[in-house]
Image (cartoon, rainbow, N blue to C red; front, side, top):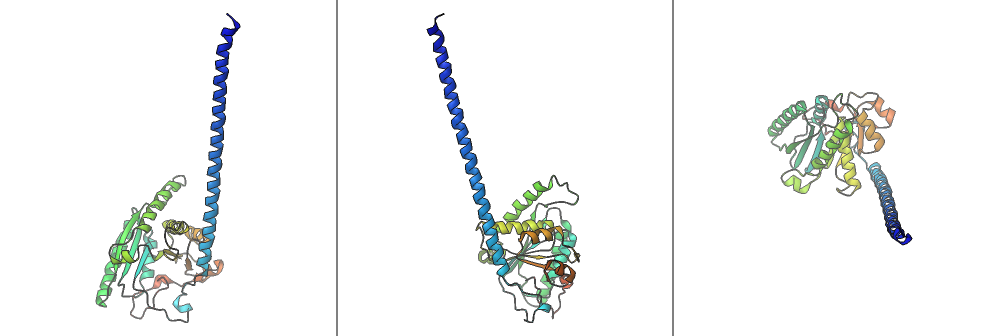
Length: 294
């Protein structure tokens, strides 16, 4: 066989190998460019989120929240008529405590909408809520005033009792996705047209409360909702006398809450927080003062 016959296949193989090598080099360069682009975008996103978080926290700290009536010399004013409140209910204990704090004797909720967020499977909270709303309607009817309107929304529970830590991130993700829908869904009627987003959000300890606060914070960071909406008010559980709950610690260290109250002086002194007193002992009395909640 002649050398010319052998050299032709070799030239073809060399050309094919060179083409493949060049293609791999181009592909490698493209992957490097893509990775560098993604990294740059992640860094830019991190810088943006950090800057927005700092900006929002600075505005929160500059906002003056009302002190409890017994700590203020000013007489509490009348509530604004148009409000859209969101109350985060938890297990039976957290729900009962929240409803007791709301039970402050106020009897006119014209133009006010109350939305209750309940975790899936929490039937106790649902029954307690229905009893509370029936009593409130009777109270307002006796005073010839309006009880306003309310609705309930159910979201996936962030973490069940004794749930494995390995599965908690998945259930937490499902919960926060559902929370976004609740926050962005306006209530029916005229109130929803005027106030499509909650004006204030209240929580007192359930794990879902942290994810609600986090979701509201993210919506403000990315300019989805105005910064003066969805004000997150956290009231630590009355059962917490000297230490914060896990939800309370997360909210305190992340600065997600707009206002943070505790119900015992020992706990307030330990963390430099406002002691709102034992708010769970509010009652519907004719001479009751408006609660610092709203």
